[in-house]
View 1 (spheres, helix red, strand yellow):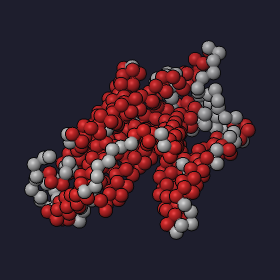
View 2 (view 1 turned 90 degrees about the vertical axis):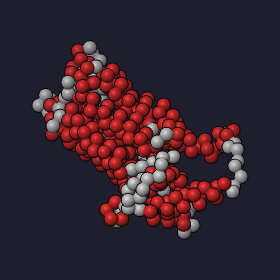
View 3 (view 1 turned 90 degrees about the horizontal axis):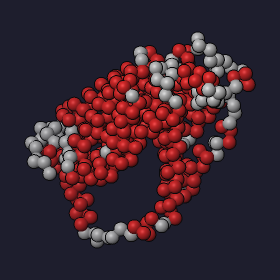
View 4 (view 1 turned 45 degrees about the vertical axis):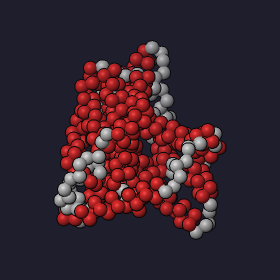
Length: 397
């Protein structure tokens, strides 16, 4: 543990507790991580030369991922699929004739690094400094983002390496924040502080998707990475200056707040010491029907979540022919609605459970079923209807 630092009083004259400054910065940090994760999903719409790919496909007598599955505009009474060269969608083509398999590799590469970094990242954060693990996580993502335009022009393999690097950095953020909260959040405030921190994942996704599309449409696709990567550097300075691994090593904290946090956490540790340490029954857990049901449900939920998160911008471009600025708004809005709807719906279900109107099992089934039953109408054949149904489906996820 770091040597105890002299307390200098809370920031802003004690109006904002230091632990909540940590929570807000943690929220922004996770927002940056998630935002830099998804910015390529939007920017790639302006990076790929869709017209060139379509022409190559036509010359070879092959159907391509661009234009092959366009919605029938006449059936919907719309000119959305007007694909002549004067259309805005064609004018927004980029310089890279990456075919669909290459695009898929680039969009999935982040998760290669992400999946291998989480467990090692957790141990590193526990054994060293969670503050600096989080710092270097965001730093790696910011650096790789700033290098993305150069890497893309060198070779798609270089861009692939940048995305894997971002994934490795992103994979250690949650373990690092878990450790930080364990050192800073009093038991009675743990839910509130955790909610503040982890809200950054949804807000970062929404804000960066929207901003990425607007920047790409008004400036260039390169500016997406330069601006967002550059702004992320500001967070690094704030995190390095204003946070510490533990209350004992924090300079900008009052004696009262430090004592309050330390005593509340030590009291919890004393209660744990008096309990018998039980051996984890791994076999029973891994073969439990309840555990397997949760595992399958969570896997399927994440499969659908990340498939839509990755593919929706390209779908809006390639199939529905949205302009990049419209694409960004349409893609970002459902994720914002989903975040708001989650807060609202969870409150309603908790209230119903508290009044014993429904059981916990019924609440879970309602929360899951409301999204499943929406699938049937999602095949209308019209872009506007598909757009609305996509948003509805994500809001109710």
